[in-house]
Amino acid sequence: MTMFKGIDYYDIESELSQEARLVRDTARAFVEREFLPSIREHYRAGTFPLELVPRMGALGMFGANLSGYGLPAIDNISYGLLMQELERGDSGLRSFASVQGALVMYPILTFGSEAQKQRWLPLLASGRAIGCFGLTEHDHGSDPAGMTTRAVKRGNGYLLSGVKMWITNGAVADLALVWAKLDGEIRGFLVERGTPGFTANEVVGKLSLRASVTAELVLDEAFVPEENLLPDAVGLKSALKCLNQARYGIVWGALGAAMACFDEVLVHSAERMVFGRPLAAFQLTQAKLADMLTEITKGQLLALQLGRLKELGKMRPEQVSLAKRNNVRMALETARTARGILGAVGISDEYQSMRHMCNLESVDTYEGTYEIHTLALGRDLTGIDAIS
Ligand SMILES: Cc1cc2nc3c(=O)[nH]c(=O)nc-3n(C[C@H](O)[C@H](O)[C@H](O)COP(=O)(O)OP(=O)(O)OC[C@H]3O[C@@H](n4cnc5c(N)ncnc54)[C@H](O)[C@@H]3O)c2cc1C
Image (cartoon, rainbow, N blue to C red; front, side):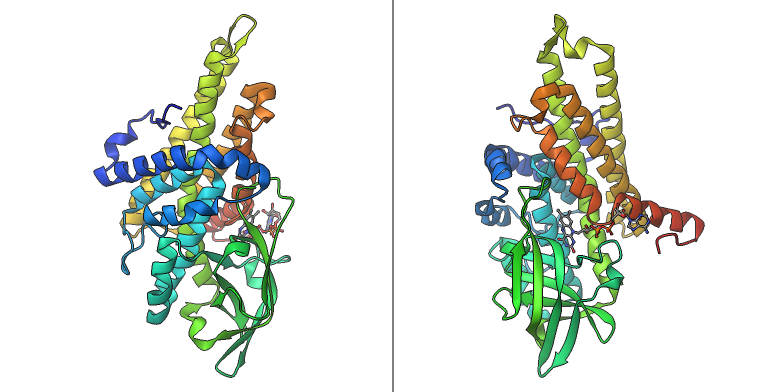
């Protein structure tokens, strides 16, 4: 197998630090050698390659842009490239790392007590513990403020009751960060596996993100000790701050999925003969390739500048909305076009474009749907809230 070379029409390479190149190349080699050989089987079986989790931990792939407590503290462009390479493998792989780092480690680091940080960050960073983030409910996805999961003070802790849905890593997690209302205010609770009254049911029958574990979390008066409440996570804005971190990773990750599809059809269209000529010799195919490359390049420049703003501490949530909305939809369109160029073989899992296409349907929906990010931009532009 020849190693993936990346798509770089505008010499973005020259903008990258040594560290960024090293992070990207390490992740690329990991995906190529250790992940891609088994993705087809995992996708068919609907399983995530859990055996790779300690290895990813050893490579510093969890919470890589976080600092303190022995965390890698790489810069945000390097982190973005890491997400890009993981999603070049599969959106499920990037989702795993996003949840672990941006949605579990980041909130513990940002809102947690010293004891919570000391205990959980090394475990999560190394992959010895897996985390999940429980915000969405069956009836409250785009509107998490309407959540019905409740915490009630009881003795030296809290009783949590409610049901969370569509929770990535939920059925394999050692630790669930569950968002629940305490006296009407949204708070974050660390719920440990094995807590009486807490169960996780794996969601089956998914046609998207099949190589990712998704679960329903059921809390039936599950007792959570006082010390497991995140002291500084108060209100929905705390949960949204975590999502903003994760969305930043998605902006780059989507590029990886789009690159995988483009790379696949660039090779295929040169080899596939139709009407006695290579498919790539036809103008309609060339137009498709030119459009794909143009959109990927625009998405790369968007991600790069967003990363620079994040480095400077100037990244606004609406700027993340713009880039998440654009890059994921762009990747989805790229994957659909690639699937078409492949013809019939494009529906076979011998090829990857359709797997990426199916995955990207989820990525377009989670972490704020395309529509919700559209309305977030509309609100920012006009000052008028059209979401609720
Ligand atoms: C594979 C997968 C993994 C996930 N992982 C997690 C996880 O780890 N943790 C977690 O908490 N959640 C997770 N989610 C949930 C995800 O964040 C939600 O699915 C998402 O927020 C959308 O909510 P919903 O599915 O209830 O859709 P709904 O809110 O019911 O929306 C349905 C449709 O209505 C549109 N819509 C909603 N409101 C408006 C409006 N005001 N105006 C116009 N259109 C609107 C939406 O854009 C969408 O097209 C995951 C989802 C998937 C599919």
